[in-house]
Length: 202
Image (cartoon, rainbow, N blue to C red):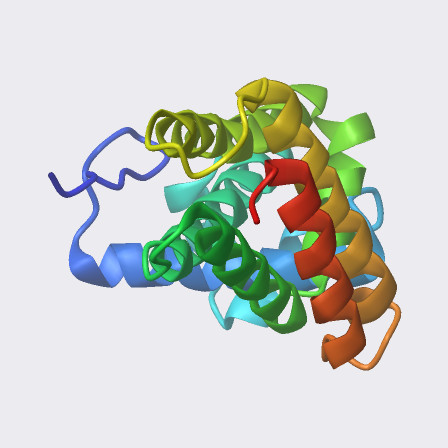
């Protein structure tokens, strides 16, 4: 079922309206990442999107609203990328490593993700919780299914999901965000060893 995208009035948007709304979100991603929430402005966002300031209010009511929607948008996109990649795995271990690879590629393309999520801690704590809760939901379900198939040891799926999420985020920060944007082969190999140990797979 296709999700209906609405504007500030709550009315469904046309395909052109959806595209303009996404341009505003893409511009907001760069502005919030570069300037931070408090120094960002609607003027900067509309300039970045190449639209008039009045156009902004057709889609969002405030800077806070577009920030919250940006967190949702990035969350949806990173989860989609990870799910698509992990679905290609023949085992849970393969799925985990493919999912990590997709996450690292996404953060290479969207380096502002880290800063935006960290800003949410102070700007919109409910969106910080939303981001991690949504990431963990599918993860917990996938681990539970893998245990039922005998592909992993008997684990607490929620604790395992959050531990692996933390590993992926910190490794991505160190070698993608603070590195040259490419995950070194030896780090990938070590991550595979760690994930194998956590899952209890041969």
